[in-house]
Length: 282
Image (cartoon, rainbow, N blue to C red; front, side, top):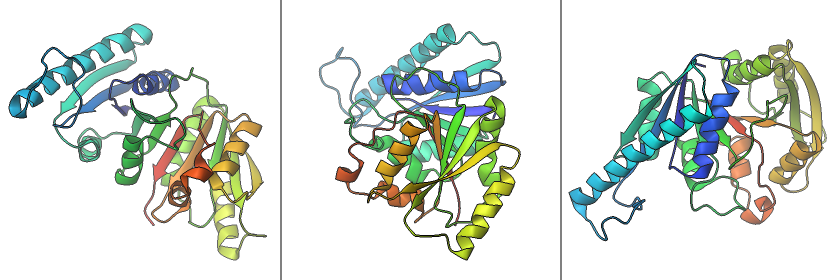
């Protein structure tokens, strides 16, 4: 991983994600692209001018975006004195998802990093609204979401949640293998037990997964289904003292079903570890 795109709205959550990424990749030569987007509905960060509209408003928002990015760069250089890391800024008057997608393609991005909650998101949500938009809309690059203001912990224990209902390939699993090899991590493969046993297709996928991860310390786990996948995953993460959760994201797949669970089933699932999501094609 050499090119990292970090999305920021200048919240504490966004800075926590940036700092986590620099520590995660501290042994690698990396360029970090800090991206901030804005439009007419973006709140002004200062009150130097009581009211502006049209071009004047966008000009001020653009100035504040540039200032925020420069401050963020200055702060991370002080906090992360690493000659192997380079920081560049991107400020755009455009939509977040489309700008992130375009930047991923133009800058050959290997990983997108963002906080899992923004400035205004309530605590009892699975992800903030912008994070959900990126997860659903960005299908060409792995995404790492980081909880607000967490201290960096090396991911020695990585949970990989799957329902074995999609086939696996080496490319999909490469981000997981990269991090596991980088930190000599153990991977805990977790399956929520919605059925009494796996069917033949699931068994085949399970065998394939084990082969791809054969060089890594792996264990297989079945979690009882409580009526909420979020609750099962949250319990698993806590019981095994997991440092990072990873999942593949297919359309109509396990992660999408998890996100569609009613809020009441997810209210106690306030994920306190980084979450690696790898988008996949069906």
